[in-house]
Image (cartoon, rainbow, N blue to C red; front, side):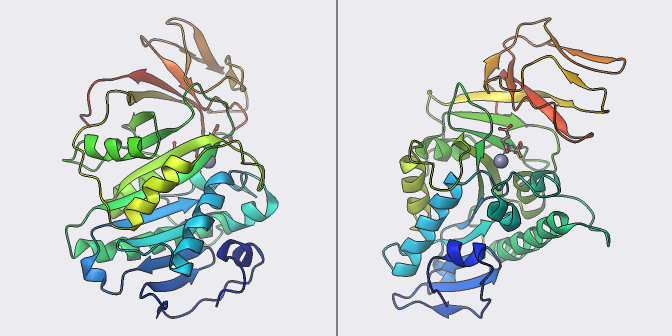
Length: 336
Ligand SMILES: O=C(O)CCC(=O)N[C@@H](CCC(=O)O)C(=O)O
Ligand SMILES: [Zn+2]
């Protein structure tokens, strides 16, 4: 089943789907789809955690894909033994082959939508990935074990804080969980952005529809395959290995060093007349000055109203209807 690495086989279009089987050291494994592989212990009932680790939702963000490939290889060799149920997802295989963020549409803007007969390949792939996560996490409904989804990215932008995460709002009746933020700190993440609005992103989907504690995790600067040596992912790799091995940290509060922000506003591009008054090369977390003009779109203008605001993902070249940036502000509160 594995001639060469799972990543190499996937990129070569040689995925072989199959029934679940046991590896010599007892782990259960199944290739569910192109770029989707699931591992678990011989006795799934003993799993302390249901974990999805996704990467490559954007095809130019390769460091997390190389990290996932190392984890899959360690599991296949028996060097890493799964106690958690874990499913790995290489999101946008076509874009990974092309080395581009996407082929036709940004896949991370295609979740939580109603499928249509006219859907393009990326829309169909997003829908298939939703089905894989619904099925994987449906097993979790039978027990009260934690459901966790890390969607690993790297960023087009430089950043004043290298490793950070976007935390989609939990469902009604739930608050953001400091313990979940504390786990991220163990993976080397230094800031978390609490997102209180809906979003068409993979992590928002698994939070909203799978009841998972989900994050988009930005691990550094995007670079092509083989050019990620300068990016240190060792702490995140150790954290993911511990989770896969069934070590679920029980910290109940995030370290004081973790910076917590709330997404105050999304700047949405409403027409081709849109202008962003912040250079698209501006680093993430660059401070904004209260009263400073942000953007104009026809007769609508945005200025910085917030105190202590910073910019995230400034990008005027997004498609109409998509966000051209996030305005964040510091917060002490984890309330939803
Ligand atoms: O660097 C950038 O401009 C974008 C990096 C990236 O792909 N970020 C994700 C964030 C997803 C989220 O908000 O949860 C994205 O834009 O899809
Ligand atoms: Zn990305």
